[in-house]
Every structure is written in structure tokens, then in C-alpha cells.
Length: 329
Image (cartoon, rainbow, N blue to C red; front, side):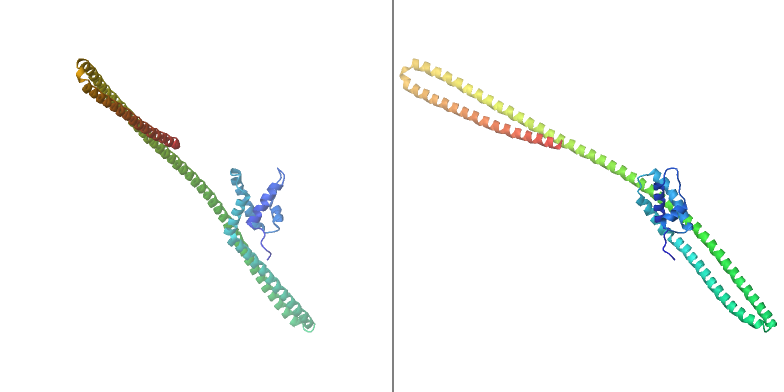
């Protein structure tokens, strides 16, 4: 037999090409499809055209479906109905073989009968009785041939019925395949929607968790900044208190020294004889005053340096915390 041409893929492509090439309002039929694919049986082409027409609503609902997908569906249908098409082709081959065998057998019988008739006709000239008996035999053989022909007709009718049943099974299988494909597409769409919802929910939860973490970190940094600021204020208050205490102490000492100096001056005026002693005491008092002043200045310098160092450290800490807050934001 010739190579199979009316495959589902070829028929689907031919239908698509005819629909695209013809003008609006015009139609095409199975003869156009058969001509375009280059042959094939109508018993195979008609169900495939019906299947292609059933797939058109799917294309109308989802016009983005490419032709390659329909070709894949056609290939799937071709794989599913290959057995039935093979049975149909096998039945056609058997019927053709039976026809060929019957024709050859009939030709042989006719040739043999012609030879025998020639011989019998020659013999009939000699004997009328032999001719009648030979005619009876030929009639018997003819009846036998008619019986064989009737048997062949019955077998042919049975094969045609089997072919019709195979076509019905093929159509039912195609319809079931269409339902399976439609159900698979619906399941895939439902799965896609469910996965999209799950991804959206997970993304929202992750965003909320991140925002909460950022807020917690900001709060911790603000608390740390407040603690650092409080510590700075306490250090400043402590330094101011120490300075005030040092000033009060110095003023008390200075007042005492001034009183002592006045008393010494009065004592010098009263006791000129003790000038040398009082002079030495005054010198000692002046030395102590100078020493106290130097100590006070040194203490002020040290307190100022410590205060500056603490202020710089606290400022650096606050700047670091602000930088961290800005980074988190």
C-alpha cells in the first residue's frame, strides 16, 4: 500500500491553511482537505475534520494558543487512534487481498473452463451424449463458483460492518480524548491560580516580618541612643557638680587665706618685732596659695579634658547609632 498521508497532524494543518487562505464567507469541504494532504480515505479524514472543528471553540476562548499546540494535540490523537487506523488499513488490505485472490482464482477457472470447453466442443462434435454430460458438469461448477462468490460477498459485508464498528470506536475514543484534554487544561489552570495565591500570601507575610524586624531594630537603636544621651547628661551634671565643688572649696580657702593675711598684717602692725617671723609665715602662706591655685588649674584642665573625651565618645556613639538607623531605613 502507499504511504499514509491523511494523518491527524496533516489534516489539522490543511484545515488551518484552508481557513486562513479562503476569503471571508467562503467555505471548504473534505475534498479540499484530501486534495491538500495529497490523498487519504474519507473514513479517516471526516472524523479528523470534525475533531478540528470541535477544537475551534478552544482557540476562540484562548486565541493565544499556538498552532503548534493543536499540532501536538493532533499528534496525541494520532498516537491514540493508531491502533484503530491500523485495524482499518488491515481490513482494507485483507479485502483487497481477497478480491485479488478471487479474481485470480476466477481467471484461472475461466481459463481452465475455456480450455475444457474447447476440448469438449471438439469432442461434442463426436458425441452429443458426452457434450450433455459435460454441460451438466460445467453447470455444477458454475453453481459452485456462484456459491463461492456469495460466500465472498458475505465476508465482504462482514468486513464492512467491522470497519463501521471500528469507526464508531474511533469516534468515541476521540471524544474521550477531547474530554481528557479539556479536563487537564482546567486542572492546570486551577493549579496555577492556587500557586499564585500561595506565593502572594508568602510574599506578604515575609514583607510584614521584615518590617516588624526593622521596627524592632529601630526601637532598640532608639533606646540605646536614649541611654547614651542620659549617660552623657549624667556625666555633664557630674562634671559641673565637681567643678562647682572645686570652686566653692577654692573660694573658702581663698577667703580663709585673705582673713589670715589681714590678721597677719594687723599682727605685723601691732608686733613689729615679729616681722621676720610673720614675713616667713606670709611667704609660706603665699606659697601654699600658689600651690592651691596650680592644683585648681590642673584639676580644671584634667576635668575639661575628661569631659571633652566623654563628649567626643558619646557624639561618636550617637553618630554610629544614627548611621545604623539610616541604614535600616
